[in-house]
Image (tube, rainbow, N blue to C red; front, side, top):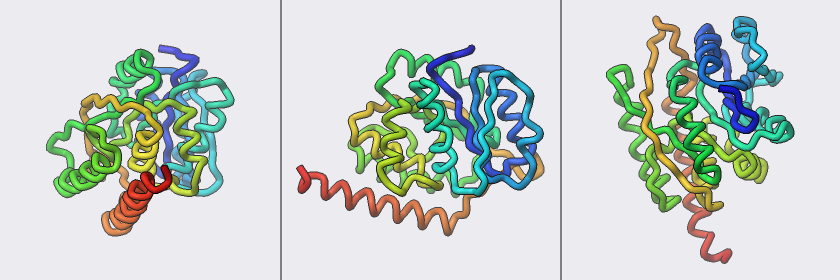
Length: 238
């Protein structure tokens, strides 16, 4: 399906051969697809398929997932797109569900459509268990029934997302998914949860993960501490 309003945006950093496979699958189900190469050094962009529905944006240096998303949001807004479906470049997210998510977004343009992962046996147990705390904190911070605060397969209203990202210096790395969700909820953007399958690939299958348990969990903890502090200050500001 080709759309003038709903875009698929794929940030990528050193994703290897999985990037080309993910993009080709996304293009089968939706166009346009934009890929932001976030300072990759693995030549993965050279393997991308040739398609009129594909645009590739290059960042000179690696800045993190949120920085790559922001690099796509700005030109997308200028091009007149109203919504953006963000998905990972490593093949974990189901490209076959893109059209269904975009249709839910079309029917509910003021809402963000959040993927809630259905894990199979490939999911690392420590990752599955670790999400429970993030989900509980996100529900506390928003007062909303958040299905999953970390899963990156989502449709956002573009301009509200761009505004919250440009309003501060955060949401540039792995904290993007959770903090963007919370701050959009604070702005009154509704939440619609939709279950989708997720698959974790092993290294032998070409799986790539830049998540570091110690470093990134500390960053997430700091983010939630900051958000909880901001939440407690909100009544004082009013």
